[in-house]
Amino acid sequence: MKTATGNSAPALSAARCWQAVLRRNRWFDGVFVYGVRSTGIYCRPSCAARKPQRKQAQFFALPASAERAGYRACLRCHPQRSGEDAVAAERVLEMCQYIDAHIMERLTLGYLALVFNLPARQLAKMFRQVAGLTPQQYQAAARLNQFKGAVRGGARITTAMHAAGFSSSSRLYSASFGLTPRSYARGAAGQRIWQHVARCYLGYVLVAATERGVCAVELGASRSALLRRMRAEFPQAHLLPGDVRLRHWVAAILRDLTGRGPVAALPLDVRASVFQAQVWRALQTIPSGETRTYQQVAVGIGRPRAVRAVAQACAANPVALLVPCHRVVRAGGALAGYRWGVARKQALLLREQRRKTQRK
Ligand SMILES: [Zn+2]
Image (cartoon, rainbow, N blue to C red; front, side, top):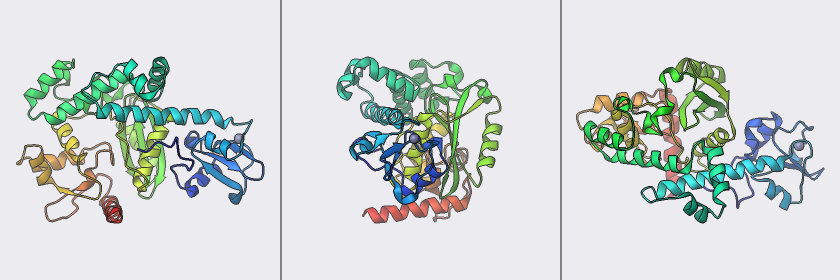
């Protein structure tokens, strides 16, 4: 994902920004600020001040860009502080991408501090606040994840998991498809889960995350239906409104949906059997704008006869879009099923194919 730091326009369209301003949508605090030409003041989207006319409003990704354009910070909503969160979230995403790209190297805090030109203590604090874990924990999880993707066969995976310090109970249910298995108790008892629903061209998208990563991405026709589904899925969890970190993840997913940028490699925290994890990893390698058949995926993971099991694993995917199960079709091109409706699958594929053609 491109960082917004050097760029004055928000990642969202002006129309979306304006909608957020009209609704005083707190979700977009930290995602952008808006300046009012007639007063020379800039605000967070949620500011309680009277709303300007549309033609008076100008949108910026960061408070600093608004200030460069001559606006002063509103004394009521202190938008300059919301920008600090946004910068931190972008920087931490960059750090995650860096770690992903240097996964087998020894990355000490001191080394990362040099790479990102930040004092080590500040980097550690920022990373923890945004990602909910240390850079070392993130790397350990990412490394295990990658290793698992490469390993074929249960015995070797078990060995790998033991070597990585996971208990034998995680042998069948390796919740560590995204991150460590400890975070995932049965029914998510006592677990804190943040959730947010946003509108998109597929209806509504709900993104939910534990402190370790995204645990659900659901698509649906209404906000209330999605929230009910979450309650049924995680009956024991404390469901909370989304925090800054989740808001940025939602924004990244929306950017991906509208073709304004590829979805960042967000950390996942989902429960998966070893086989499901293998299938889902394979799906993540299918480029946008392309499809594979269930058969091709089965061959790709070294289980050519497990076509039906591959289809079942696709149907069980809890994170729409992040694990792009919509890119798997029947031999001959028929769309087959989609957990969130075949019409949505078709719409997604059409958009992705069109975008790919435009890129050429
Ligand atoms: Zn304000």
